[in-house]
Image (cartoon, rainbow, N blue to C red; front, side, top):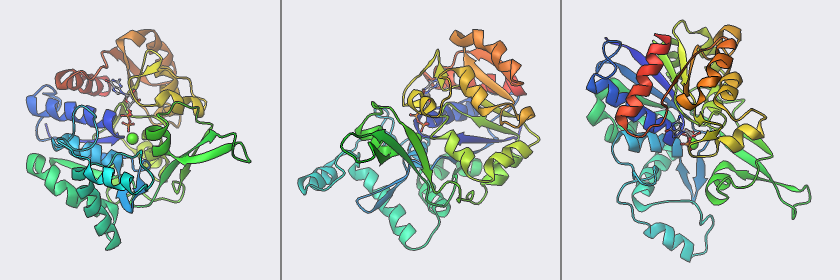
Length: 338
Ligand code: GDP
Ligand code: CA
């Protein structure tokens, strides 16, 4: 059956889920509900974006693009396969900061193209389309679209304790918190700079409003899905939909699988559990955004609590160990709200 699915994605978790979803569509694992003709639109978080050494870097867009275009380094889960690091070493030899940010030589080519086009005045959405002509169009044609959540500059910043600062606090870019500090210190507060005044990129509102199904993959609920929902107009489009919205918990047994969802949820006062995240998103019937929510089998005791919120819930294996396992998760999501 022909269907339109929209996925609101962060980086690695979302990319891995998308890989399994696309595998399920092409292998028939999601038939008869949906099959190879299905069109998938990815709306990706851009609040992780950073300007570094004069280059505009979009980590989540690139992780999705490289993963689905088979250019990702599978071990790291970000950046290009067969990468070399000469430029990074040369920059460090000049003593130029930041030295902690991973910039591979192959990857830099992507950032150079993007930055050059930004300087020429193109919006990020058009530039992303141009980059995807290399990575996605050959394999997927027009069945797969990657859209940034917004063309505007939005950046997540994190306040951390710093005894040497007069205020006792220091505000750093999300990438510095994640890459340099490895999210090992508490995030006292988050600021989403530019989010309030941003507007959805062209096609985003339509993709969210008109898709047959919207899926929230396992992505960080605060700094990935949360920022996408924070672009004025996107949450409204989710609420105005007639079709369902289904999410997959990134928290399994009170912990994240990777990343720093625990730190981010704690920082905004949300319980670190699959039910806590479901409650944070809320039921569409009560002004939230979810119709369905998948929790892992180890969290089956939470099903009743999630359903009491007005959200359909099922407990299924949620570990994305391989494409078949992930496709089975996508199938469970379809069935839950189908
Ligand atoms: P993001 O994708 O940019 O939001 O960043 P990450 O890849 O760091 O985070 C993705 C989220 O997905 C994290 O909160 C992880 O706990 C979660 N995640 C990663 N792998 C799995 C998995 O196999 N199963 C589930 N359920 N969640 C996962
Ligand atoms: Ca991310």
